[in-house]
Image (cartoon, rainbow, N blue to C red; front, side, top):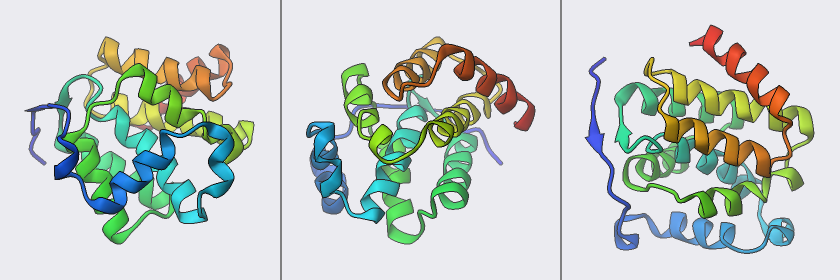
Length: 166
């Protein structure tokens, strides 16, 4: 497996698939509108959070894409075109802290606290899978975890567990 190291530039909206743009638009709405998301879109919203961590350090590596692919498939049953779209998003789109908070605000309406803690662990897996923890990745995880109402202690515990898994 090669270590692809690509500098990430925020994707032009025209380069993203239309159905992904629709989902991102829905996720930019207030969290109270989560009930308007279909079950597939709810899983994709979580996968978008996972994908947001891949370019957090402004570099995309094959190992991160592979880990994203595995986690989205195994944990959230995202497959086919949806999975391809999530991977495209991870490769082409860097997220601001405000965008991370907005997307993460939907998740407490979708997942219970234990599942949110597990999600934070999956974020750590993506951050650690390239054997480098960049400050920007760490900041993104803490931003997301805070928005998910995951206590700092649990976030740190999830980091230790993820480090053992990767």
